[in-house]
Length: 241
Image 1 (cartoon, rainbow, N blue to C red):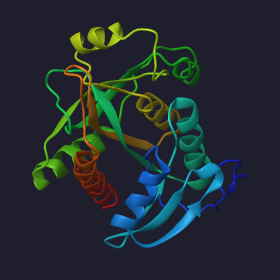
Image 2 (cartoon, rainbow, N blue to C red; image 1 turned 90 degrees about the vertical axis):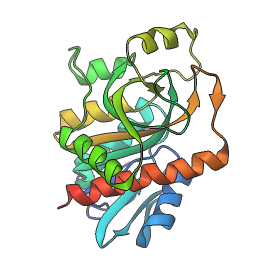
Image 3 (spheres, rainbow, N blue to C red; image 1 turned 60 degrees about the vertical axis):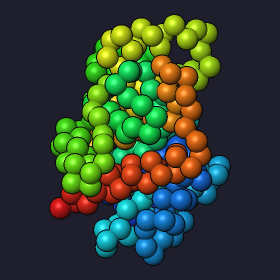
């Protein structure tokens, strides 16, 4: 298993590019590959978690679906790093907006992630450590967004283990503490990247405005998703330079 395949990824070492985008949804992974990459080939279909490798302006890029929640995503993050040599992971996902300062369709560049996940404490050996991105990637994302005229806000998010929690009061508490959005994977990504010594960044589109009780239409999701992927691929291009 040292060089693949693993229980969850069927490829061999070398099938994944050093820079890999990690959406949750396999349909989103396929969309990214078909819409943005050239010479694509499918490198994984195990459990329906589609993965692809192709070229973006001549640069090798992979896209791998990782599912929902830290327990699922952590498997793919870890295997991509340990067994396939991935050095940079860029999450392209969605979140619920918790702040008056963000609206539907806004893109958040996650500058850190709080969490209620017990898995993060385990990964950190019981220490209460911050989950942080690679700062060069974050700065690059902000620069790419400015160059492309895309509005992006950098700020902290909260990674929840539960989509349907016992109470919604936590949303108000998080918003008052400056948390911009809630989602289910970023703390896992940032923590595993730190433990494994690789680079990670998360870009999130606000698809649900929890403060105003608004939900983005499918058409608006698609348009904003394009902007988020443009930023991610721009970051990938700069990271490879």
